Length: 206
Image (cartoon, rainbow, N blue to C red; front, side, top):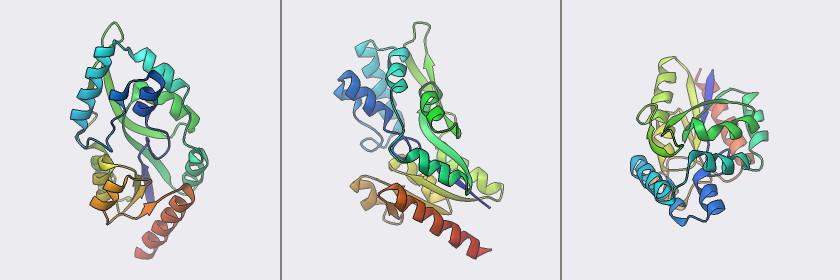
């Protein structure tokens, strides 16, 4: 039996911080893990920008409330959940993810926690676990599950490497060049085929 592990942003939903940047006109928030692979460096930058702009968590949540999954994501996720159990592994935060999880049918989500002061300002964050995506896959392997994983960016590659089959979904060219060992899917139909091929290969190994 295999489990599917999916990244959230860039695979099922748009990049939350990019949507916030566009909606609020804050260019400094446009950088993502596609641009800065060091997650702590990236988050310290984001929190600094929010502080400089005086933005509160509630204002960001308002933007997220108006977001929707990527076109075709709901259908793909429904298709996949009929074929395997699915866990979404994300570097986002529980305070951000709720509205999007609802639209996706509440798949299991492992992510992180924001630290918010009494005035609603984001002052820090707490990782559930360092390199948590890879660690989750490793723990599932210890439970004798086979894992097929899909992600789109630098911060997903350790998860893809740990999985039995790792798939890149709409990655930037730099990620493709740096990690040529992972097959690339450009749309959800190709991603379905990639998961089907992985399932066939796993079955053949038994």
